[in-house]
Amino acid sequence: MGYTPGDIVPRDGTVYCRLHPDTTAHVKKGERFPPPSRHAGGSDRCEWEYKR
Image (cartoon, one colour):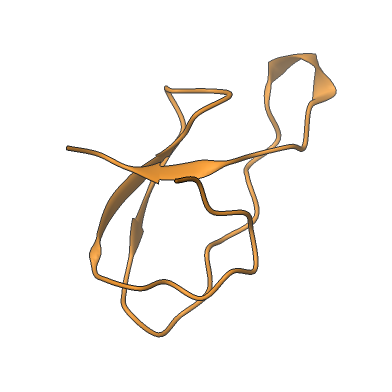
């Protein structure tokens, strides 16, 4: 299950963008998933997934 920027973070952890796997972020429960950094090619879409 992926999360989009602005969704509430359900648990602490490290997430990566499924569309751009080299993009990662550290998130904390109760905060919101961050917007993606500007990706090569100009894509601003991101679907966050927890690293396993």
